[in-house]
Image (cartoon, rainbow, N blue to C red; front, side):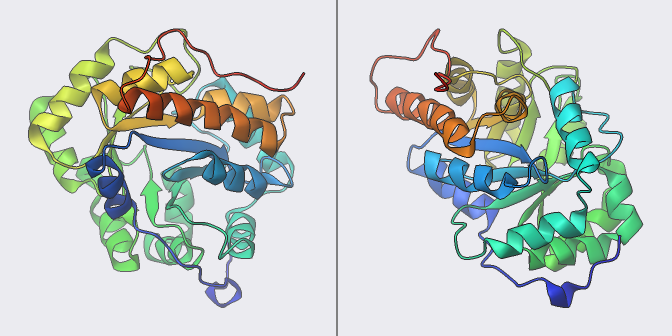
Length: 289
């Protein structure tokens, strides 16, 4: 990957943790949707639609040919992006092109191979130059975080770490201590993907994180509907939604259509926090006629 940082216009980069803490402390349920960078020619329009729909931050997947933590939907999105010739350089240039229009923190999610290939320091500097302030690299264990964490901190990028139902207590505490931005609670032992119900293990995991850390905790993996998002926000501080949104993108839904779907999730989260009728059983509508 060859990228000249001078070719990327620096955008105002909003901090992840400060933003999400403020949302939480004001009683707002946090909603972080995902989009695969380069999945379509107009992929940044989905990003902007998420923002208008009420996203508190946005996770951007940097496609990799072997996304080991991702299920079929995200794998398909990554394959489609790579088939289009998508590169990290292209994604960062696309983000630079929408500078000034982005008002929420941006978080990159990718795999260690891409970071190592560019060099951790150079990679994180490039992310920061494109306005990305968070980084998730799920295949780097906390024991091997050193170079990655140092490079991220030096570039002003918050490295977000994951905990799983199998994470033992001592290791969970270390991950929570070293994570920045928020703690990503993986609700289930498995890959990303849509599910009929939110895993029972999510509640215990969120409680375990809250027992050792004041950092925001978000539940992800299998958050597939408005009802799931509301359930996650009851257990934790909010939710990450990925596969259910990307399936719609892959099926041809426009940015406006996916934005309307996400806005429906936002409304249910707000209704729940305002004490109105709960969203139990509500599915996200898909306004395509």
